Length: 305
Image (spheres, rainbow, N blue to C red):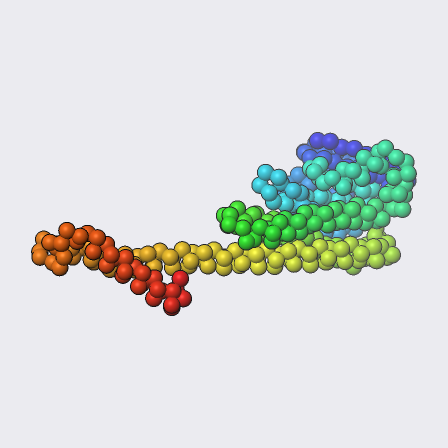
């Protein structure tokens, strides 16, 4: 729906936000060599990350995390890239801040246009992907902070809140891991691909992005293990608290058994010891108290209390 074009020798950057059928038709007319299936991919809701190679162009589908504050989860935001000799076409939904900021800087500054587009389309592709990958680091830093907050609250009495926070963070980390893991083979393929559009010296540049993705993967995997250990700890604490409550309730129930027996016997309509004694109630209550004290002393001696 929104198409913007920046030109700086030797590259023309076309940026499309929320592509529709009209944008597809315009791209088909401007680049008749684009495969119809690739053009269909840019208007689909979500595509799996991939790299398609054609004789005249490369087509990339990549995902980058976008924070959903309502559901408290990082969702995948798709970026489609056509790499043609002298042309760079990006298609996205406008939510990827580094990409939007890079285009706005190029619009506002000739120097920025030269830095991004002046070294060729292959370097422009590398620079954009590198910025988007580096943007994942602060996202994972927020996950680290949430994990530390959980660690601080782990032994609080409000277990329900801690369990809920662990579940939310674990779901977020699972989503981040899925996104990060899916980009690694794409950039590795870019590193190894032999195509006239990508110059040989770009192998080291894309290799650097792969290294960053490996670091992100390791951080996400480590956070996942930490959150799982927190979940195990919370389960252990919850089980311990339940066992403590059950032990107290069991002691109370056992103590009540002889008291119930005594009260039931003295409630029978028969002649019983102390039945005619004016202090019968006091004597019976005293017997019950002695029984309770003896049982408590026994439980204490066995370390049940």
